[in-house]
Image (cartoon, rainbow, N blue to C red; front, side):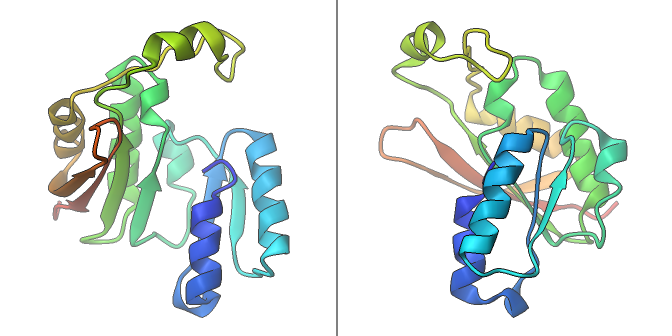
Length: 169
């Protein structure tokens, strides 16, 4: 989740009694930022946890099972589909019956080479993003047991946000 600002702003706007927010990340810095924002916004029921989105066993520890899982800006950072499939399978197992997955994708990016030459990834190496056609991302989601419902894209087709629903097992 990193700092999860957009989710925390939503929780503040809607009121904590209307939703339960759990922010998970592997990176302690992002979680510290999330905790700081949580305090700043006066939120008291937000859970902040260190976790591995690519480890199905770690995902099983999330309780209670969520109705919605959001994976934003993560899968683009990994070139191989195998860890993404593990993550999606773990999310499918975790979600409540008929729960929803919201996921992002970057099918194209006009500054891909510049990003790789100028920005480091979290390991300090060149940040080489893995662009996936929307069809490829949707196939991974479908293979994990979800039914794709809708995709929205920005005007340039760089960023997409999709929603899928857990199919009954």
